[in-house]
Image (cartoon, rainbow, N blue to C red):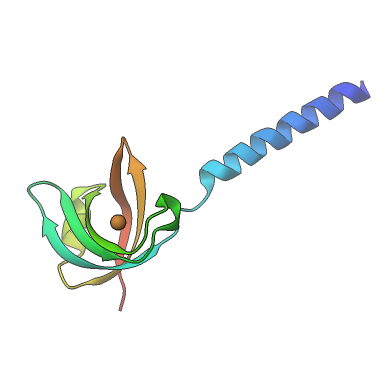
Length: 99
Ligand SMILES: [Cu+2]
């Protein structure tokens, strides 16, 4: 009986670890919006390094997760944003202007 309990405990720990990894917050990165393209649903951001994408600082085009994002910020805005790879495309999943 004790063996079974130990086995279940290890499985529970393994599952817990997997969920913790999935739930891990994507870091917010500082940047400045330089361009918004509502036709393509993309925005250009001059950004600081993005640790979760292993990317250095640069200016690049991101896909916006939804259209509201494209009107939430405008060129020239300093922002904090989160970027993730979604279906192979680097996508802004969260963005907010910083003052
Ligand atoms: Cu980049």
